[in-house]
Every structure is written in C-alpha cells, then in structure tokens.
Image (cartoon, rainbow, N blue to C red; front, side, top):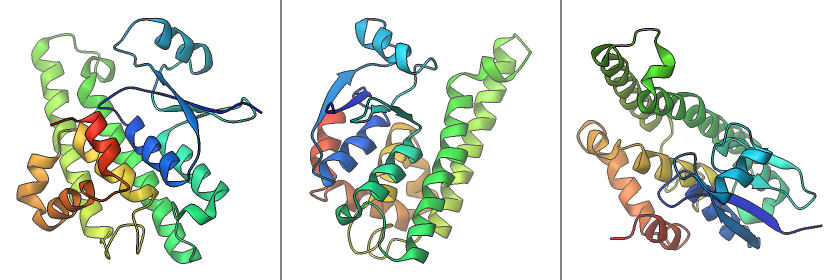
Length: 211
C-alpha cells in the first residue's frame, strides 16, 4: 500500500479534497499539477487522468479516482467517523445530492464559461463571448437554486462542516460567484464567509487564497 497522492493546484477545486483529507486525518502527498501549468506535474497527471483535470486522487492501492464529488463521497463512505457525510441515511442522501448538484450544474457551467470555444461551432469572438455570458448566467442561477434547496443548519452537512460544505465554499470562491451571491442570496453569502473562518476550512482556504 502506498500513501494517498493528490494532484491539485493553489486556488483550485483541489482545496475541497484537501479539507476532506485533513478532516479524515489521512496522510497524503500533494503534487502540484494543473492543465494551465505545463511541466512534470501535468505530465504525471495526464499519465493517470488523460483529461488532465484536478483534483485527481490516487488511492492507497494505486487506483485513480477523479471527479470532486466522487472523491468526497468515497472519502466520506470509507471514513464514516470523519463526519464528511452525515450518519443519518436521509441527511447523507441529501448531502450526496448536493455534491452531485454542484458537480453537474456549477462545475458544468464553469467549464463552458472558461472554454466557450469548445461549446460552439462559431468562431467569432462575439459568438464565444455570448456563450461565456450565458454560462455565467446559468452558473449564477445554479447557485441561487442551491442556496434555496440546501439550508445550513448550522452547516450544510449538519452539526459540523463536511464534504458538501467543503465543495460549496471552494467552488463558489474560485468560480467567481461570491459577488452575485452577496446580492442575490445574502444569507447564503454570509454563511460562506462564516464557513471560511471555521478551523476545518480556514487553514486550507488561507493556503489557497492568501490575503
């Protein structure tokens, strides 16, 4: 068995997995890699994940796990005492639903907005910009719906922050959705700021977004 290896980059979605690994008290090696940073880290990442996406987690048995929601659910199920997923079956189901919601709706819109040329056959800058703006509007709408459907009581995962809290606080930050949420869903925005100060979140948050 080998230690866990996490491929990630500062200011990215890998921060959520780092939070989860720390909460589960799991030792891991961090390899800096990102599709926008050519070098040995990216080469190693693409060797195990051809999409070159982060986070990517190599498990103790050498198997490769990709997709943030899948990684967080796996860690929560493998380490139930960590509190990453609620112990109650109904609450756990809703947490898993929330994780997939972010992956399917927020992540998807971010991908379109970041690379609009991949989602249209038009080649003009104006056409790509139109796709980008539409994706941004869809992303904001997705976060509004998330805030309406997943109340924090006091956290999204229950009495303590868990996998859903970690993914929400990280993805809402690096996707640039906070300014919109401040206006559209001020209570949810305030919750995210409170969550950033929690001991389970603050150290990783500060490391990824210093200052």
